[in-house]
Image 1 (cartoon, helix red, strand yellow):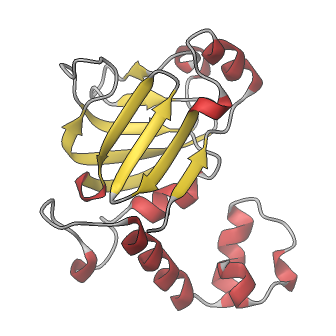
Image 2 (image 1 turned 180 degrees about the horizontal axis):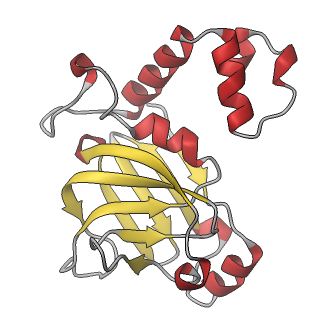
Image 3 (image 1 turned 120 degrees about the horizontal axis):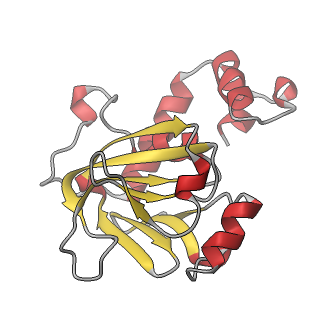
Length: 186
């Protein structure tokens, strides 16, 4: 089974404020393993099956004063927000709302916003809404991390080296002009 862990990208102001609520870089991560997505943020935890993920996309430009500190709920849609920087995040949408903010699970969240180190990569890995029909899943199917990694790898293999270089540059990776296609995929 392939396990994947993505750490959160902490802005210094967010990190100081988060520590007041028991959140530190070592206690904040999004993990994909055994067919589950787990998001840990200090004392807060979201865990759901990968088959419950309906889509994921990159969002940017948050109102930083409002999001500094603990996990928060969006008043607009009850989505759970776990933000550690004001720049980029991945919004994950669920088929069935998940527990997260309160320990009893009375408040359920239809989405989760996380600000991991590589938000575009997480969104690309989790987003199944843009995949072709044969690869879309239903909640009854077991989706594993291996399946998601294989799908992402297949998509990358289908791109040209020039397209891979463009994607790498968009993610802020330097020195890609001298990499071959295999290295770009890695």
